[in-house]
Structure formats: C-alpha cells, structure tokens
Image 1 (tube, rainbow, N blue to C red):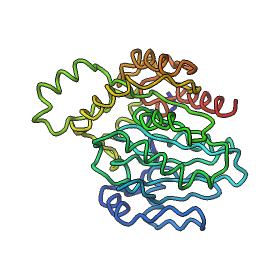
Image 2 (tube, rainbow, N blue to C red):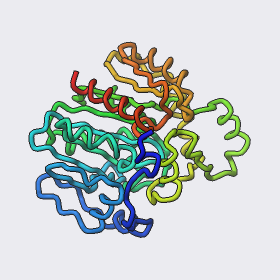
Image 3 (cartoon, rainbow, N blue to C red):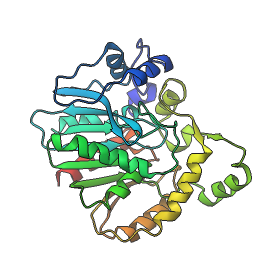
Image 4 (cartoon, rainbow, N blue to C red):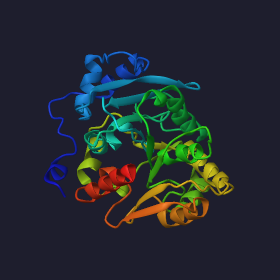
Length: 325
C-alpha cells in the first residue's frame, strides 16, 4: 500500500468543508454553461480543494442541468487538445468527487477531457437522498448529459460506470441514438452480496425499517478511504433507504428479460469484491453480452478506483489501455 494511502485518503488538512457548506452549494448551484469562462464561487473552490479535485485542466466547469424533475450536478474538465471525452458515473451512496479522485488526473494526463455527474439523490444533485422509485432515472440523468453537453465536447466519447452507475449504462446500451465508442463497467451491479439472505431479511423486517446502515469497510480494502468517508466526508450517505433496496430487487427481476446485446463492453471485476454476488453477476453478463471482455483483479475489493496501490494503478492502467485500443 502506498504510504499516502496508509496515512490519509485526501490531504485536505486545514480546509473546512462540512454539511452546512455542502447545503449552501446545493441551494446556490448554477446551470452548467460550457460556452463561457468558468466562474466558480469561493465556496465551490473550497469544495474542489477539500476533495482534491482542482486538477490541472485547461478549464473546470461545475453546475447543474435538468433531467426530468431532477437537477443533476456535473463536473467538466477540458483539455484544449483533447483526444476524446470520458464520462464517469459513480456508484451508490457515493458522489463523483470521491469515486474518481484518483482516476480523473490520470485521464487528464493522457490527454482526455473528463465529465462526471452526481446521480439523482447523491452528491449535489437533488432528489430523495440515496433513494429511487425507478432506476430509469439513472439512465435519464446520463442521457440528459449526453443530449445537452456531450456533443459540445471532443470525441470520440467513452463512458465508465462503477457499481450502481452501471445500471443507467445498461439502459444506455439499448439506446440506438447513443454514439459512445467505449463502455467500461467496473464492478457492475446485478445482485448485491448475500442476495437471497438479504431478500429474506427484507420480507421479515423491511416493512418497519425505513433505512439500514451501510457497512463501509465491507466493500473496500482501503482503510484510509473507509475512515475518511465514515468521519470526514459530508456528502457520503451512510444509511440506505429500504425503499431503494426494494427498487433494486424489482430492477433485478426485470433485467432477466433483457434481450441479448452484441455490443462490446469491458467489465472490470475484483475477485475480493464483498459488496456483490460477483460470480453470479459475471455469469449473467456473459449471457446478456456475449461479446463482453472481462478483466479480473485478484487483490481488489468492490471500490476498484479507490483500492490501495499497486492494485489501483493496475486497474487504472487497464482503463487507459481499453480507451486507447
């Protein structure tokens, strides 16, 4: 493990950023405008500094766009001589500033422009916190960005999703109006860990439990990251509504009827993933996507882009390889 990962996840000592500051940004965030020079407030700049996402790009835009009734927060990092744009979709309970902190600078260094959105109910996007009555809203948030902004950004266009972020990408893969060259699905959600047991528990107790605690250390090998999101991350959501879990069960039942899709997708999967029933998921995806390419990482848990070095470096190198080949 890299020394910096052993000691801390983000070196943001001395920067104050808490729930009050986050709520202020959520209430005052402005529409995302790629046609003018970025004008980020001091509060937003402080947010960038806290999460160490003030990367070396030619421009860093931050704002919201509309997706149905939701306002979706988004970052766009521009490279003037970009060789393409990578759109990033984070997983459940997380947000774009934490999931991709280590991946974004590597993509920028390789000459890509990068965009990242906060899913509905996460980060600075509005909606019921960490909840969803229909996972279609994740797809609509991605397509909304595609329709409103991605055409303004350099092509070719690529997309990377992590865990629940892949849920919206599955719907995107059925949309013939989408022109994306590379689809990379990192630890894609189909079934969560202990699927049958958790469904049984939901039948017994879910009717009177409005939410359940999240086992943060369960899905990551990076103890410094686990400590950070447990104590210092005001945007991380530590309780999962049981209504979201029911929506997940319904979605999983429905996708069994999905037709076979011959598009090529890249699947990245850690063999120590404790958040998913990943062996079932891979078997399912092989059937639904017969042209998929699967890359396993023996030492990685669920949080692939957050795992300690050297595993994380290998994962990011794999991403770069498939973007460029």
